[in-house]
Image (cartoon, rainbow, N blue to C red; front, side, top):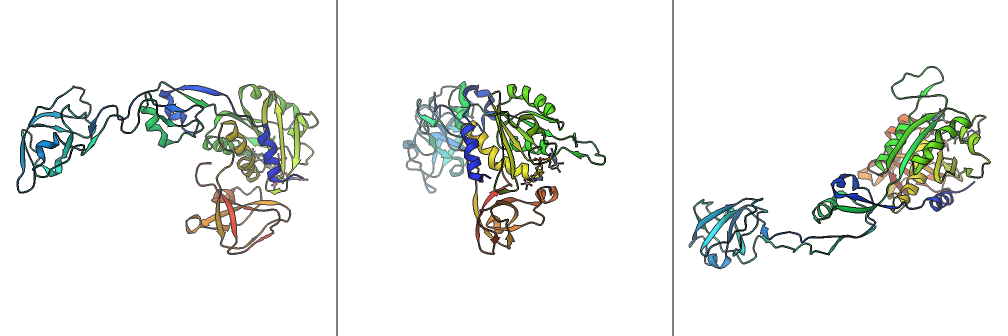
Length: 404
Ligand SMILES: Nc1nc2c(c(=O)[nH]1)N[C@H]1C(S)=C(S)[C@@H](COP(=O)(O)OP(=O)(O)OC[C@H]3O[C@@H](n4cnc5c(N)ncnc54)[C@H](O)[C@@H]3O)O[C@H]1N2
Ligand code: MOO
């Protein structure tokens, strides 16, 4: 038997980072979740032009230094400058221009008087407070200079990176290609979604669940298919996918039964290993390489498949995508006691209390319990040498509430 950590290391060794690809900036939405392969340097200054930070009046600060509530300054309003105004304007001495947030400051102006300290006049405006030079002005290049690195290589692109990426004057971005993942459910008992199972049959739920986990993890789906319980059926399903996908995930057919199709297809081939792990759920696992493509053969029980994906497959896919392999964990306090099997790392289904600081087990830890799976919010990781959790103990937890 191997430990969880030993098996994780074995799979990570086989997970090589995928090559870089240049993607057009117009596909920026689909770049979120990818890792930058090269520094992003801005081609332009940001802001690109000096502009107003407030709705108000563009002025020379020197013209309003005496303005106060008791002695307001009255000025001629020479122009209206909305955002998007592309004219090159110059302010004449003694005049001001009504200006909106984000509109280009006219030459000659060096401050903006917010509309709130004026009477809002359209032809003549009365200003009742002084402003200093530079006030409410955003200067060209004050945020970013051309050539500045705005996002370093190795960064996982998130929504917060999008504004600067969109504005940096680039046409392409180099990112590590994200793995295209094929999902294959094995089992003669499986029916497609929407069909009503007869006696001995079930709907394939692992396929759609893994497809959702792949998408949630930020990877691409190459295919979601099913195949029957023979070695030939498995080989016929997997061989073409090895060409079109960067990784294949199968479920079922890896334990000790008389008809274990993954084992029938690949055991003894030299390219596949079937192992038992000191974990619960997720004990039987297989891993192999077909035509250069890694194949993660997960156990068929739905809970075992989900846990195996998070613990073994997600880290490997993340490494292929150039990301750090570890998926996020946090610590929580046990709020209700439970038992864990001796000699096994248990991934216990728990629910949160106290904003995620406290976890409680949910009833039914069987690997087939789909209702219980739907009801849990997190997996608590109980080390192999711990058999009993008591109220107040600390455990590490993988949240199932957010994105992986
Ligand atoms: N004699 C032994 N029996 C079993 C052992 C063992 O060590 N010795 N291990 C048990 C454990 S632990 C697990 S986990 C399962 C793993 O079994 P397989 O990976 O071979 O999976 P199957 O037998 O094909 O299916 C198990 C179970 O899951 C259901 N299933 C399968 N695929 C799907 C799917 N796509 N969607 C929904 N449900 C699925 C299947 O109908 C079975 O009920 O083996 C134990 N047995
Ligand atoms: O290890 Mo199996 O995955 O317990 O049900």
